[in-house]
Length: 116
Image (cartoon, rainbow, N blue to C red; front, side):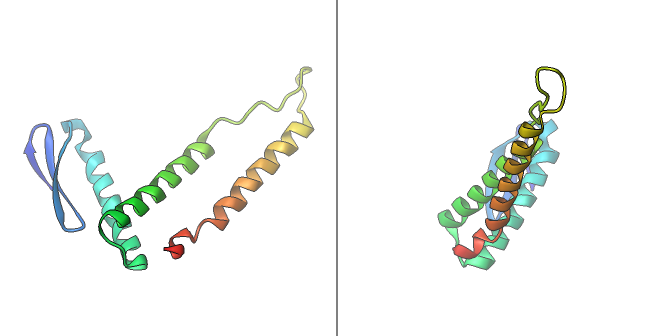
């Protein structure tokens, strides 16, 4: 990666060069994003023998899925107290069941790249 001017950066992903806009204070984060994307694209390309647009879409879908899952896990837990301030055991059990369902679903989808 090279700096083209103060607001752009030349990057390479999968052997192709791109010039992207980038504020100077965001360069480090962009370098990390380029590294992550290039690594993910190489992994998926190796497993699926895909390239080009199909590869980019598959990697974008996987990254979006990871982001949504991370956001869901980081969401604040709902209050499980009843109106008297005591823990509502039924609400707590429902919340635990919901978390277990999400975990089961995530574990079942872990090998999704093998489908392509």
